[in-house]
Length: 312
Image (cartoon, rainbow, N blue to C red; front, side, top):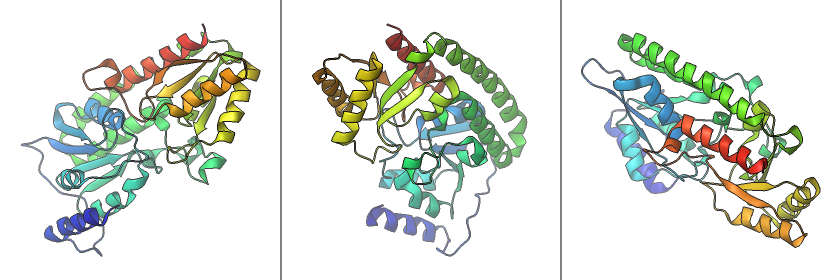
């Protein structure tokens, strides 16, 4: 994080009467006459908060369509908006790697909540390539995401206990929609023969998806897009595609397509043609106002795109 952002954070904290040594505190407020001001990092979290909070919340996501949370750096405007919030929801598990220091500092002024904290670590994946850390891409397993929705509801109920019944009712209704969404993904996945359920993407974001819905998953880059795909990675996957006769690979909306295009060319050099089956939404949703700009729409778009490309 740049020195300017650090200085701005310190100014905000000191002007609010907090010293760097103060213990993190929760902002106390009367929400009877106004909405709760919520800042989230990703669009997926913002969508969940909107569904649970309903008319009681005013939500703003820092990271819009096509934005990579692994590489995102907080701007001065972000810091000011977070300082004015009643609560900040973020994913955690190092998804927002470059914002860790911001959240640490913000805890002294604003309530912050990592929605992944409520998930049992036994349910999380910890790939060897991620150096002992957990895979943060939990939203690709709708069942795991339902736990996140429950965590958000419980956090809002504590923050604004007077509206607890509203949050409980909204969360229950939304969770039922997610049960139906999970069933839809399972149904669509079953259309692909087991031996063809191989998903190859730009970076290793879909492991929870693979575990939940029976796909073998390969990514050119690692769990974080901060890792670079090298010639050896492309060669290995190209050989794998030719050997298994994989019909399609996929680009991602928040990751430059050059690596997948290089992979496609390497496969062609080996006498086999692999199609780019489409662009998947991985670390960011679609544009606001579109179906893919919601969590449910994003998930349906992804599974439909994957299935249609692999069963051709």
